[in-house]
Length: 241
Image 1 (cartoon, rainbow, N blue to C red):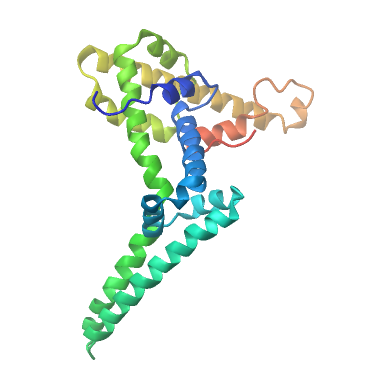
Image 2 (cartoon, helix red, strand yellow):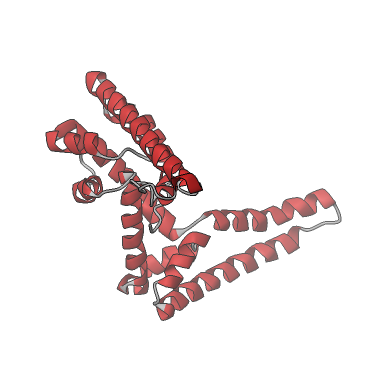
């Protein structure tokens, strides 16, 4: 594999006690990218150029704000505002020159501004950084599965995956595995997913029962954190327990 492998974060994720190792990878990666963005790198021209061009999604602007580097975030957003204002002024001037009494032509001339704003609303520097590295994380999972017995043991011993990442691994498997190894992976993946979804479902069922007075004096078993663990399984969100 010529591209960089990320064996350490992938192994760390499968060593961690998590309902979905892939969710854990993303959360750790997200934290690293936030720290990188708000560290000294925000003064670098290439980074500032990308943050100015792409901006940030709602989720990641909140995380950047919580990082507490208010000066750094202000400088980043000032550059972003400068870029947006310049682009909109240019597009607006172009639209003004091409406007005509025709409603159809007017709508067509405004499409440059609309397309720009819609594209900007879909873009995020943090998301783009995460996506680029995350693709290598997934490739590394399959690389380790193909080549390392120790990792295959970790894979079989994990607590399964959330719905989204179960589907992702299912989809990506044929790109990286073949023959009997592919079939073994799919069989293990299906078993891990279903067995652990049922485990969490049963924990959630008992959590619900504990609100019934008839079970008030019964032990909680493994159900106290069943709700956040279920949210991880269903929505790929790791919440504090």
